[in-house]
Amino acid sequence: MASRSLGHTRYAPQAVTVYGAGIFGLSCAFELARRGVTVQVLDDRGIGAGSSGGTVGALAPHVPEQWEPKKQFQLESLLMARAFWADVAQIGGADSGYARIGRIQPLADQAQIARARDRAQGAATYWGDNAEWRVIPATDFTVLDCVSPTGWMIHDTLSGRINPRAACQALALALRALGATISIGRDMSPAYTTVIHATGTRGLAQLSADFNTAVGNGVKGQSAVFKFDAPFAPQLYTDGLHFVPHSNGTLAIGSTSERYYDDPTTTDFQLDLVIEKARSLCPALRDAPVIDRWAGVRPRAKTRAPMLGPWPDRPGHFIVNGGFKIGLGMAPKIAHVMADLILTGTDTIPQGFHVQDNL
Image (tube, rainbow, N blue to C red; front, side, top):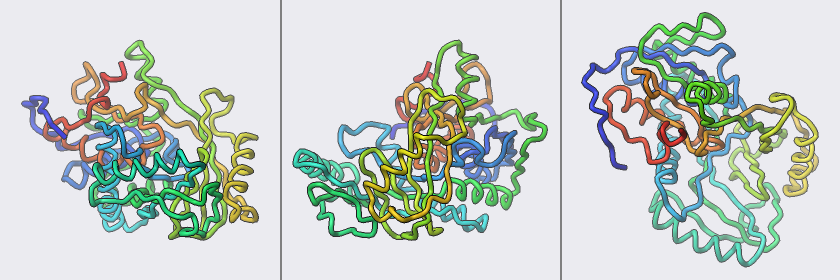
């Protein structure tokens, strides 16, 4: 990925304030802290209190075709994830629930089989030796007992899973171990002049007001958690639903995508329908009890990609937002890119990810 310098002549900041204790804010704070920067994290609601406190945790790549900077960036981030989360666990002592478990996708008809085989060639080209995309008999994976009308499915080895809540807590522990301060619900005044704004849906509303144009909005999602122990099974994606087995004896499903809603954090009949659909698509879940339900609003920037970079006309202020449905998988690479930008002025943000791309 080509880089360019912003031509910074100032000294690299020795201290940074981060607004937002979600996955983006905490990941950026962690990357800065382990590079020796003094870090202050501020959030008036709590660690992972927004959309980063969800339940699904699917880390899944875009299809390997029509390659573009966003797909390359995501690939690099997914490949960084194992080392990134291992470092978080080693420094802070807590497990994020990360594992590269792969993913299966049932194929509904012959056209889907042909398309999937074409994409296997794309994976060989774009993913190289890093991961595989194969068309396999559905009988190769039986733990989830998913329905495949053709008897065939896709299996990729790039996909992974993470427990979003555990990941946020693991990052917070690692940050404190590195000497960072995390202040929740107290004075929200920044201690330092270099500031990252990773404030999710509320941040998009603020940016829209400041720029006098809509730069994004929030999309409500609802998900559920079953008591179902299959920690080494691949995640399943079928008919618009993610089924993600976690290491703690649970399996999460989701989610809805609701542009219009009355209450951002209340679950309703739409989740009931998702649960019913999940049991139908995955008979192994028919008798599994639902032990948790979640609803929240996820930030969706105008371009749907992450929105990264300097805040226009606010020197020393930076924006990290967006990444609708792909933020967890993008976090390691975003943290690395933003640390480079802030500390050295080196801009490796991909085309389409800049703040200006949303204006």
